[in-house]
Image (cartoon, rainbow, N blue to C red; front, side, top):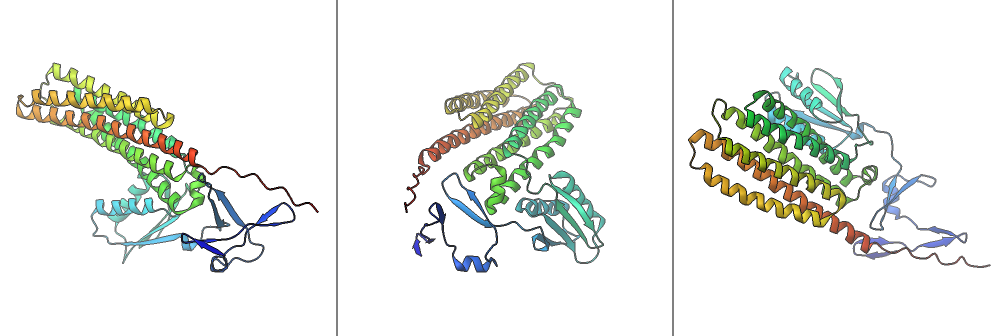
Length: 358
């Protein structure tokens, strides 16, 4: 046995003329209760590595995570804790209270189960609720999830501007409700990536490398932020209700919104295509959008109080959408270069030496 850089080394041996064998570290094998005849699974990595893990066993009680909460915990605090537990992963989550669980606590748990992808209420008792992840090892493709988030965010932004321009409270309320859909997809991406970082089998199921997981997690976060700004624009509708908005300013806002969404659409496309030239064009276009926003802001500062505040809010959110599109374009450039670098540095396949002749 040899050690190098903190790793144990084993020399490859040859048996039977064509079969390679490598011995396993005894401490690792015994600590996992392995015996002769047990099955090991192998997963090749894009970087040339090979991950070895034991055969997956059926889910058991050791996969259950028990969390004790209090009935006096504020609803938003409890909800955030449940989201954190969800992102941490695990097939079974048991939420308990010391004493009988209140109706309010159960209501938050039920709302949580409805808001996220996977967990369903499996069992309830006087002091506990057990949630089971029904998605398990068959996740939705992260690339498709991010695409779906983009379509939802783009529609939210378009509808938010329609609500603002026409002072339509019904559309504004609908935009607010759809924000939950974006949140649940973002939490799902976080959960899948967290699980993949912890378990190579989950990474294999996703069909992505670690750098790709990081890329789509970053993209998901950016899209979730854009959705928040769409909600902010929708909420301004209530602030301007009954006020006459300047037509010339509304026309400028429409143009800015269209430019921001065009940049966002192009940035997402470059994330999948790897077109760095187009990604740089997005960055240049968004710089021009920011410059236009500054010019408009100077004009709005001279307007009456409430209208000026409303216009400034919307203007800032449109700018943030453009800047987040720039972030996505930079993520796309980094991802493209990283992919090319990984392909260039992949270890070349070595020719197999000829079998010994008898």
